[in-house]
Every structure is written in structure tokens, then in C-alpha cells.
Image 1: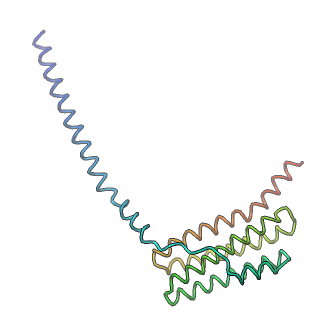
Image 2: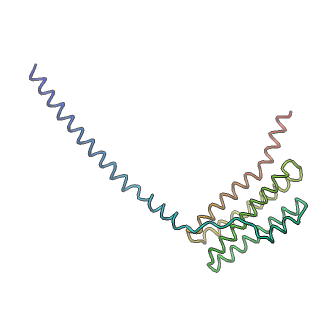
Image 3: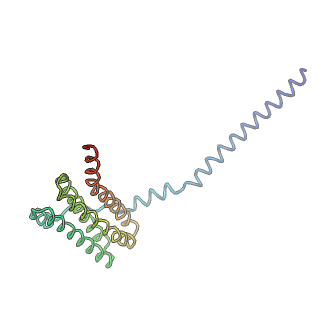
Length: 192
């Protein structure tokens, strides 16, 4: 009986030490796989470091003056959409002559116009006339997305990242522009 206990103890010790060796090997293998499988972190960081600075999102004095001169909501919305279209066209023209920074700067102005128009329309959200302008705004923004995509495709990656972010911004703005339509439906159901 004592002999069986000694054999069992030796077997257990050898199995236990074997498990430690296997465990150590497994950990080393896991660490090595981690380094081999995920080298993209450093390259992704380097790609972010290579990006150009984002464009400034500001209106020109002339654009601000023109928008402030319009007193009617419908006319102001139409003017803002026209100014956005002009910015996109200028951006595409600069892109044709490989002036990527100028093209991106025009898109920064475009984004400022989008932000300004949404802010303006949100002031009048409860009015019936504002719904038509929100609809016009949202539908026009939808038409701008393919144009932005074409610009993004032509730009080098260090510039196109910002265009992609701008496309997300336009998409989010479209969602905000249709919120008043759903807000009215919800409040009408609550009032019944």
C-alpha cells in the first residue's frame, strides 16, 4: 500500500511539473501570437499621426452677412443651401488641380454652413413653416453625400479621413433635421 502511494505521489509530481511546463509554454506562445497578430496598432497610430490638421469650420464674413440679411426662413434656408453647393463645387475644383488643402478648407466652410443652418432652424422648431425648411434642408443634405463621397475617393488618405468624418457629421445632421417630424407625432399621440 505504501508503495502504491509512492508511485501515485511520483506520478502526481511529474504530472504537476509537466502541467507547469505546458502552462509556461502556452503563456509564451500566447504572448508571441499577440505580438505577431496585432502589429496594426503601431501602424494605425502612425496613420493618425500622418493626418493633416482638420479644416476650420467657420463662415466667411460675406456668407455671414448674406445669411443675416435674409429675414424670411424659407429664403435664408435656400440661400444657405446654395452657399453649401458653391462650397462643394469649389472643393471639387481645387481637387481637380491637386490642391488638397484648399479643397479641404472649402469643406470646412461647408460644414460651418451646415452647422449654422441647423442651429438657425432649431430656433423655430415649433413653427409649422419650419417643417418645410427642415425637409428641404434634409433632402438637400442627402444629395450632398454622394458628392462628398466622390471628393473623399479622390483625396489622399491623410486628407480623406477628415472628409469621412464630415460625411458622418452630415449624416448625423440629417437625423437631427428629421427629429421635429417625429417629435410632433409623439406629442400628438400623448395629447389624445
